[in-house]
Image (spheres, rainbow, N blue to C red):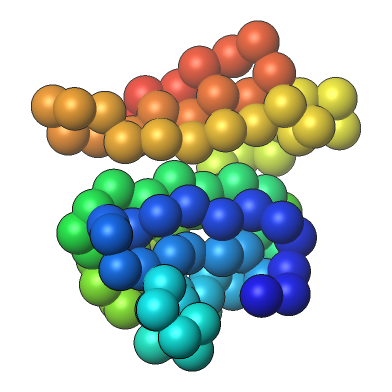
Length: 113
């Protein structure tokens, strides 16, 4: 699998990989691409996956996207004033157990309901 080196398991039979501005979902057995999550206009900076079918991604286009299966169900623009070059080196995103998303940028934490 080519790309940025970012990958997460999406259940026992799927692997999600960042490849430039897209996320690609691969079958673990066989390695073929099942589908591509397209929507970011610049490279994916980080993402998280929750089995069986949810992903969240943050891209260099300063948008947070929530994916269900192969569809983007929510796009949230993030103001560039929240980000500096330094904090973009330390950015992560994840789902919260009770619902919502947490975006960590540098020493700041943002909760998205």
